[in-house]
Image 1 (cartoon, rainbow, N blue to C red):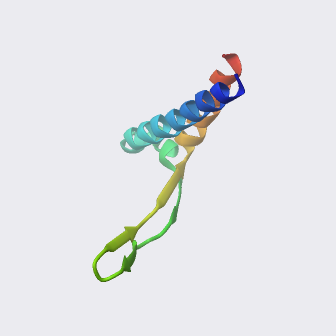
Image 2: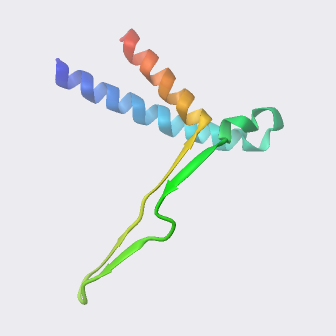
Image 3: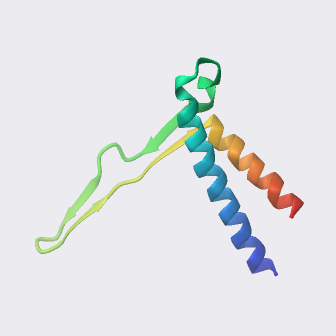
Length: 83
């Protein structure tokens, strides 16, 4: 039962982050909802390239946390508590 709860929580949190980020980007053009897209990006500005001669591997990660994604995570946690 504990393992099932972890996976449900993980799926709900990822859904809250994705849907919140999506709604934040949609609200960017609306003046009174533009605060939903306010946030901070962090990560690698340019990708890290590892050249092994035969194989080239490129690493890159950027995370953008917005107000809408924080609200999405909070709603996901509330839904999880109600389940």
